[in-house]
Image (tube, rainbow over the protein chains, first blue to last red):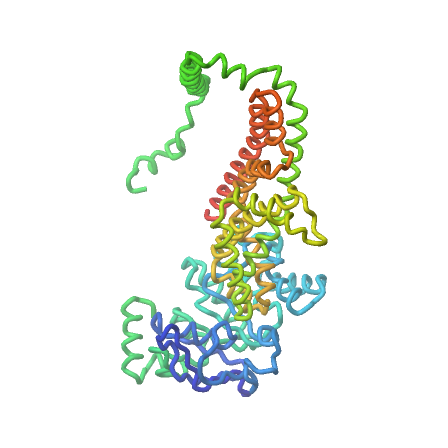
Length: 248
Length: 291
């Protein structure tokens, strides 16, 4: 499969603290890679380096062989190709669902209003949110808000989706509906990098799981191998703790 | 639930909360506090009135400050002055709201090339928050017209209004900025990830939320400015206070000042009520959002 995302020696420090340390990662087209690891291990920062929400200090990040900060993408090309969904949804509370979904297509990419709204309605219907197009986010449940956030990220037609602990803020009974959607996106061929604490989900959906510790990818492999027979002692310790907490 | 096992076992009537006791003594519950408030108000102000009225100089003061004839005589001109005050107020409001917004946005944009602007705004705010409004009015009202700058009006009305705008916009910019800062960091991240430029992020994502955040604080500024336009009387602008003073100087009777005070109260009290209402509506909206 063609390589979609490539990270070479990516490093990042915040106020002298090394958050990412020479990370190499390659993600093929249509592949789903899960990043797991303890809080503070750098997984969210790694994710945010890919769409330049965080600028890496060192190394190179390539999308389809082009550096993400290079001229190939212009000012907004990267954001059109890569969507991101956050733990806390980050919907714009003063806009309706429709307003949230059409904002970037209309204001950033110059899509005419009628066309942007038609796309939005189609996507909302696809994700079971058609009837909420005119609602404000605060009227929706957490799961519904997260579905809107996913639709918003898909509205510019990206082929890569970054998911940053998208179920961490949800009530347990709402987690399933969001995970089902993510699984559907995988089946539709979306390339995804997923930061998650849902080990069951990672085992279920990921093509590859990477375990991060102290800003490095310590171990990576297919979920069956990584969860079944972790090689690195730190991976084993992490998984043991997860298992002790009843989450695996 | 475990604390009230009987309520769960007892069927429908026990589960409902008790209906409020409205029927018996309902009118009493409504009227008695009102009567008590009115009575205590009357007592306090009655005592105050009696105390002042018993002062030796009261009859003289009453003639000088509360002379009905003098009030009637000065009313037309004070009212005319008050109309000037209100026009200054509205004009200043519009320019303060816009200019302060420019200042706050310049200060809140984060891209490196905005640094010089940020610095200038910080200096501006430091300077003009540090000078009393009265001094600014005097400096602008007497100083700048004396320069005879070509192409600019020389009237005290113009420069006094400019002084109010300059002074108040420093405060209002800080209010705006607090509203901008209160918008959650995730909103910036979401907008940036969608490809919005920093300017678009400000316009579409941040400012609408920021303005809603600070609306109650802004309403208080609106009320404060409504009274502070009276400062312009010191540079000869013929507003309500100035007209009242002119009458006072001619007749040695101060009742015109009471007329001016009454007019200001008539204008500010509804504004203050409006501000209260906006604050309450805002709080209700927040509670609703949280629940």
